[in-house]
Image (cartoon, rainbow, N blue to C red; front, side, top):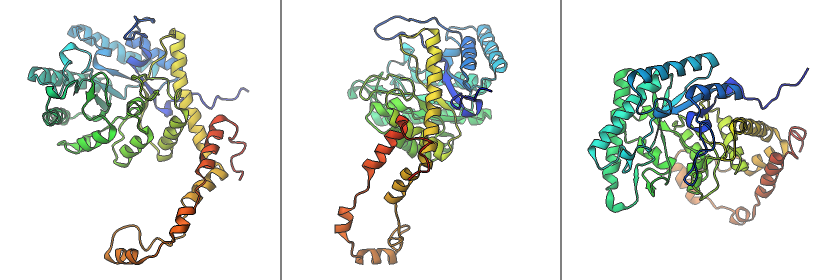
Length: 399
């Protein structure tokens, strides 16, 4: 009897893709499309074929902006039927507030109040659509919320407008009784020179100024933090620590390049490994959404290989994380680095006047502190060997 592939995606892995990801035609700034346009129904069936769990979309990915009411209803009906027929679900939706020329100066933060009102209208309709197709998370990426010149926009006024828009939309969701939460997505630049709220940390600070912060969390993206030269796993950890990791976008990125949206784990495998390890160790139960697309070189079969590759790489690193956690030598090094004989317990933890007095009087052996080696070189090398396949389950448990 043939063995089951341990890296075959299953429904419980919660792997999702956007209509705009596997539906990407390969068009870029310098070249025309190289692949056929796929309908939303075709994409749902493609995702079912490769073993995905769900599909996400921007409002106009599903329903073109120029669609009549009857066309809109037909498109949504066909999409929902495809979801039912395949078992694919729609966990997340979002509104495209970047592509329309009306949003050239931003959407929620635009100087023109008519543009801000249109952005709200478009978002209201997108929220209705998302709820209709089953979405429980709604993402906001402010792709045009920024400036090329600081002469053009007061940043305090822009943040005020951003806040007012999100407060408005939260109130709408509550008024309609929707089971929906929002997730904000940060990015430092592109397509604007400078975007407001450029990192996960800045988004985290901002959401606590909202009227309903309990409804709003974060949707960090690998490439967006790496474009700023930051450690994505650290951003995810901060969001998780705050209870605000509502969704996550997985892809890969070559530092300091344009937003590449590469296949997950294809550029920075060690960083991807530690991200997967973190998500699995803490028990993240949300979607693993791949906001990436196939190389421009690929045909329709190449797109399927891209999608399979994203999911397979995640599962490979999930298994490597299990091996890391069970490897005795690795864990011995981790334990030694964090060794605690209890001698500092009287001085650490919650402040008290007694602790502070004792700490002020304590004499540290600075020579010992300065000389101690932590064996991080060995620990990192063992990690590399684990990822390279020369140290795995066969060695797990050996010192």
